[in-house]
Image (cartoon, rainbow, N blue to C red; front, top):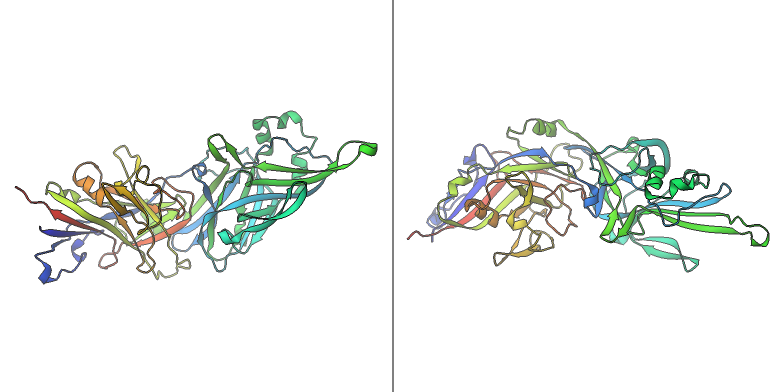
Length: 477
């Protein structure tokens, strides 16, 4: 058999791309570098936080890509028994509880975040896109300064909870706890509020509206970072404890201690219903904006950004030259090299994982065959560990950051074969960051991670992105 190797490089002048061939191996391997990859940075679509188990929050000032501000809007849920606080009540504590997710991207050495909680100036509504900018009241009803987001499993917290009529110290999952204004909640849930207003879900929601968590930008220095929060039933919400007279007289008079939980996240028949939404604003640098404004020109660097920020569109314009040649694709791998040692890059980080997907002829997103985890497997663990069964073979799809070689590798064997056989009609695909914790291969814009990558796309270097195709030429009878 004649084994041939095609190396497809992302360039307008492919003659400088490829592998050097040892003259002694020319009868075994042949190199052709006439096919190219065309790539450009484009904006990603927006997404809804309700689609994810965790959603992004924070402040990241990336000197290369730009600034990302991810605030959080969340519901104040109606409990089964609505608290009615008397004027003579004493509120012991009001605590906003937000369990952390598993992702963080940003400065881990010198972060310092001043957080502010405000009330929404509109009723919280479900299913909003992360591009929505919420109306917020001016009064700050809770603040907290954190040296870092304690999101790791080892960052469990010890809290006092009421169990069997007594206070007990217990360890709980990593969570952010912010004390809120007692005076604000005393007025919000006062017994003077019309009971009819609070008797229905809609009426209660219109009255309390919801909360808004943000980073105080005026207090931020350095790079910052993006973390994730998750909705956990019976944990994500507001813990309220207060004492008030029971309204009786004489010997029956007493002080009642009332403990209430106002749930942001609830458990329903169809699973967990999370009512917290990222609200994202971005400001891009001139280099990034140039690509967004003029996506037809070639660029030396490609920018990928989460959550739901930037993605790279890649096209293989001349792959049709391989059709009708009766070949079998043995292996196809896309290699993406990161741009390192960028002047002025105070962040110096790359997303730990990328995803890759395509669009069908109707413009709908679809996974590529090699990365279709909908029916062929349900776990992702990186380039060498994530395997599922397809066509009788186990294959790794890829996408994990290889820090030793500063690159990402995707395995696209079935995808390239399907293009050549006409099963897939488009040779265009997209690359974007993804969450390491995601057990599937996402092909929709993600809000469950924050990360960025800068891919080298410069001509004349060995680090230029490339698609290596190894194929077998079938004999013709």
